[in-house]
Image (cartoon, rainbow, N blue to C red; front, side, top):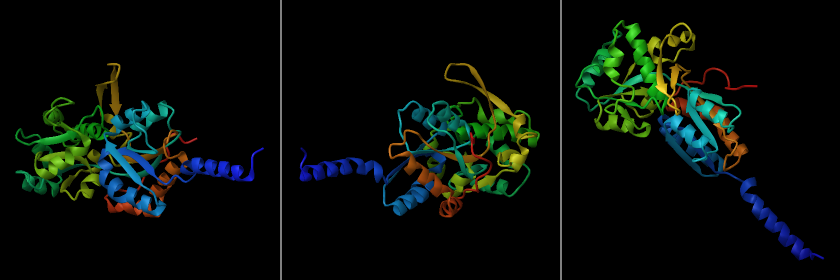
Length: 309
């Protein structure tokens, strides 16, 4: 027979073993690299303080991070991406059921306040004649962007420049600015691109208005016809441009524009539990979470949930 004291001891042991899962307070979030400031300085710490837990964030190119999560080389409770594309990778891997919009943004061209062309970019930002496009095409301008093979922003700047070429009627200028799709003189890691801009290592860089405003950097705002932010222009204007990359099997993959919306999803293998992941997503959608997004330069979410049933 088991004595009363032994029963109490076994019960205590069971409670201790169950406690970490039942009382999980920590949160691990993987996010699109452009979201570093709002996540690591805003949303993450605010959630951790309210929940009396610890926040851990990791950001890099959203496609690259999605592939690491899908291959189980990385674990997270929540993944936050811009555009639906990276989320589809996790959906196909069976790691998420849906994803919800939490914020939105638009494409801009940020410029270095320390750069030799800062005055010209400032003047271009006041005009509507596309002079920023001609500035980027100058041979001695150092332009930074991310790799379109691993980062949605790297794809979006290609789309924006193709649209600008049409909108300002300057055939060939997109190729003149970009060179090859993965031009090694232009492409940089997502996390370090704005740091290079701030230090003056590059004169201008492709950016999201949200991240550029978060970093307090000057930028050229682009018209809706170019900045990919206006859903009403998608079918008749944005969708008129596309380009091709090679997929992981070496086959041609035609890319089209996608909504400039940030989506959040809870992963089924969340190390701190699905419920804890859902709490963080709910926090992002709350009035407090939306105020933090706004404080860091993000616009309100647009559109519906992905994969809504």
